[in-house]
Image (cartoon, rainbow, N blue to C red; front, side):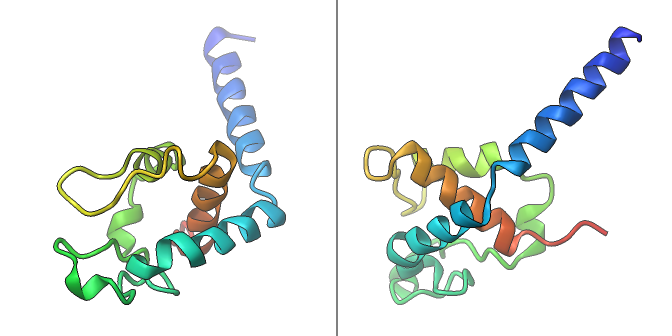
Length: 118
């Protein structure tokens, strides 16, 4: 087996393992956290229209926007949840949420809002 083929196989296995870790329980836990911590800005349905959104500029992310998801990876989303987003009111949740909680919110966002690939 060539080195390139072994590398491709390793990447495929890693990706399959990462997605398998997003269990229904983990996604449900992420939904619970989203409802408490995220929905005041992002809205109950992730449309960026929570009760606090009217007073926020720039507006909170609308997770229903397919353009947001284009090329977006779980690691990128996780970094924003953990570290916040400079220039916005997206606060960092590091120290507020555990690493497992941040992973759960990331899993929930991807499972719920990311458009299916054609």
